[in-house]
Length: 426
Ligand code: SF4
Image 1 (cartoon, rainbow, N blue to C red):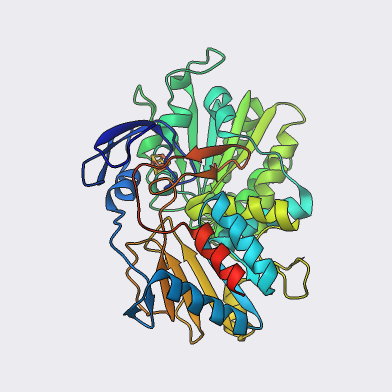
Image 2 (cartoon, rainbow, N blue to C red):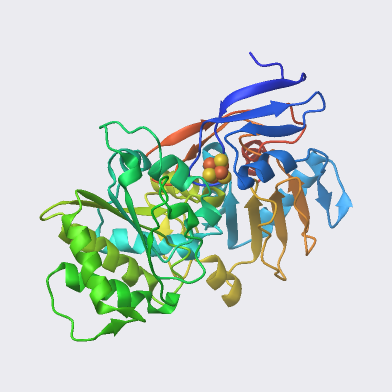
């Protein structure tokens, strides 16, 4: 049993700072409970583990308050609301279970801060299904990786280190021979796609708003159609033809994207071009999609919502039973229309994801380092999952959940405990 009051070293720590959930970090704790990642760090994980302070305390209308008073005030606001909204939802599984419970009791809507991107994937699943793979499969089998419109390493810094240029794989593949193609986007950091022996990735850039055309063209070419245009989105058709052939000749290609990066009108149709192309490739070879996500606990929120309500994010309990609507129950739509009358914003993993500025009663359950631009009616700093308390998080590939460790003692309350207390006070 670790003594959290003393300095110590914790190995095999899971990092929840992005959806890769790397579980090989070593974190050192000093006698004052400050943390430092000492191995297998990336810049994002260093920021995550080093910055979390424990000195924040609750406030009501900007004035310091004790936790009980803050909970009572939050319960009063929730009890008076006719159509409350729980949004942000940056938390782990147990915190999200508490969100669903209090949302059910208070007839609220639930939506995640990253849903504008994430729902693009959900709409594809709902409309046509897809064939996607896991990070483990990528690590062990991929021979051609096509990255669509996404600067992977900005959000998932160790992706190439852990999943592409990994030294060992289960089936004896020489991972250094893997091929990487960046398709679409501009100013993308392609350096991590350089193989360990210095082979450059292929880069086919285009403006992000031309991705719909480019992905549709590539899908058509994979299906054996002839294109008469000489270029699509600034990419020579001959280059797309070569890529289509490479996809057909690969033994296990993987086409990856982050839905948040595919920020074009009706992006779900662009993603559907990718996933339907993958389905077509599987008539003669093996290919899979790999949607990258899991930032700010978006997988946790969607998984828990799905198993409790039967629906993903953007689900309302206003009628006393769960109803899902990807448009009308979005945070943006509810705030713009004035339909919601109280906002409950949660961001316990990232202090930089602030609540939208609104003229509504607002309660923020935030990371202790959160610097608010607009003081809410109630601010309750909560413990950081994976640092101040244990938890469970879902990885980007949505099928693997990993335990988050407690690394030190904390006086901050857990989100789940705070929400349960509010629910009981209703
Ligand atoms: S890549 Fe992501 S999960 Fe891995 S250490 Fe960096 S921030 Fe953490």
